Image (spheres, rainbow, N blue to C red):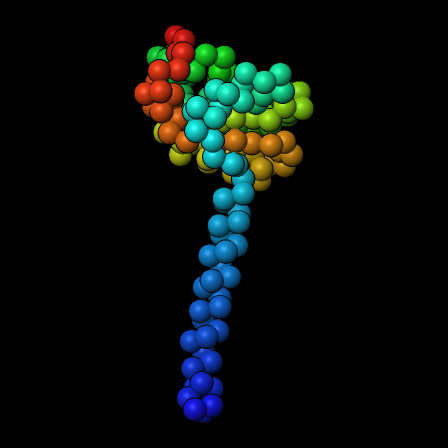
Length: 139
């Protein structure tokens, strides 16, 4: 019995390595931003210390319609805007929004990698979910 288990040690080692890699990858991407629904974000923004909403879509998408009060910082400029975002947030958290939630998650990863120290939320479903929920849009 013991000799059978000893022959399997390479498989056990590989399994541990795969699990460890997956855990590290999940920690690196999953902890960059907490996901919030548009309803949660709307409630959070009603608070005095609610997050500052940053729209990471293109200027054209932003002009076509955005959540009320959103500030445009396109994804392709997010890294170099880190210091400005720190000032704009003024100690508050950031909520990042895009069309569906994918670019805003990427923006959170970029900001954290660039050394942004504040709390970041990723808006699940993005402006698509915002509009579907009937929340206010401005153009």
